[in-house]
Length: 355
Image (cartoon, rainbow, N blue to C red; front, side, top):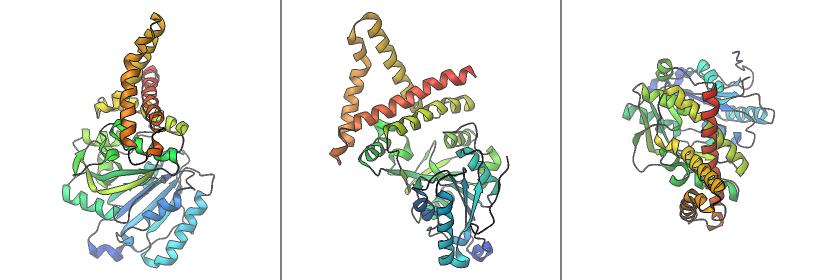
């Protein structure tokens, strides 16, 4: 796979040794992006606004051949920061990703990275100014192989806010720690936008490029299976912008379910039993509907739909208690999330086994 490291105005090289006396590790932030014109100013801007010494950060923006204004906006952002920061500005490079997928972008970034610590930051999220510093502190304090925090999921429309609320609730996504958050730090099975010691990738390899989705879950599962530890720190958080339509949410979670099957196949185990719940739900739902159809007894359909409707309604009320305008949308959002993931999971069982 050929990659191209841009060396024109987009690259701001600095003498990294100017901060070496601080004894701080060099951090590489890899940003896999494609067509992120709507969010890239906030996302890249947040990376370039860290309170960690700029001379100890390099940023690799790995672009999947964007055909919107993303590249032009990146260039403008970098040039403005360079004028303000001078020699203390972070080194930024833009690298082409012909494969146009996130795992390929991450592996291209790993090939170019010089950092002692590697952090993934997507173009759809923002990190607070203390993010890098807190991740480094958590790695040093706990001895973990990877450290990260919780996602604060936001939406920019009423529907998007309902989707964000569902993605942050236990009924919506189960007990996944980085989605729902934790009051105290703990070791977990996965985090989003984690900070990894470089030697992790030297030891277990990079991202699986077959996994268009869930490549970070597979990497983290591979890490924990090898004896590594992942630490979730409540002091660390990042902002993620949710999908803005039910159609986009369906596609996102259908693909999550579909590729989760492949992760299970590759790892030969299940990282958490919560991954199986949506598939079991959809299978039970289909079975009850088929039974009702064959027996011409509609009550059989209620075996699954009835309890789920009650649980969905209760969760919708609880999730919308601070924003009652979202209440009419919540049952649809929860239903889309659960059925999409479960349907994708069942389709994945069929497709991946057939291969």
